[in-house]
Image 1 (spheres, rainbow, N blue to C red):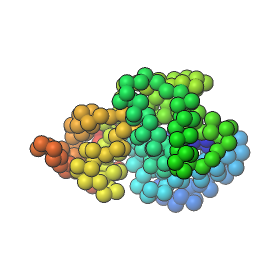
Image 2: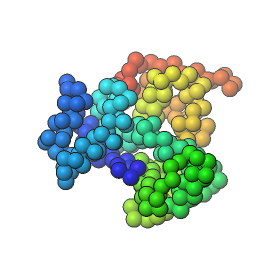
Image 3: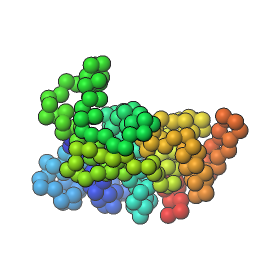
Image 4: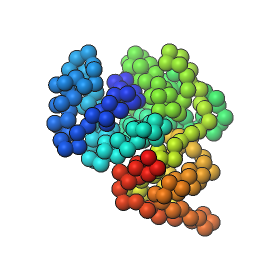
Length: 248
């Protein structure tokens, strides 16, 4: 969170210029030697590629970046997909979104501040679930966390404000389909998909999750049916690329 935050502009640039005929090492070398991310130094490019791009979009498999190319024309869906991969790679981001932020939303709070995040850091440290950071690192990480959530569209507020607002939940159908498939390919059952904590990252309560599945069904990538508490999701596509290509 200190190093890159959401890094959406850099991620978009990487996805646009990624050469599928080359491996990650060759692509990274090309980005670094040609300074394709327009950074002040090669070390900054290498740092971003190693700390942000690799764990979020390369390590999960060679299918992720090509699939993201299919979302470049859909800003909301691309942002949703990047948020999913970023939270998957960053436990702090996922834990905060699925924990305190979700609780604040259920409580009816309209916003939160850097101080709220710092209180959460204190609770983690007391339970031995976080390192003992300096005050400067704690503050920078808290600001970075809120800024990333703003850039991913979960919060709203100016870059300089210590307080961010919580807008009504929103998620693109194609972004939802991307996340659902990624969870499915990692072994999530139909019921697990419908009840997954992952939807908390977008503040989606059960009724909104149900509605999103119906919207995604209209894209032609899946069928969903319910009988009481039982839910069944049948996929009509065979790959993440087919998911992101839906209704393009």
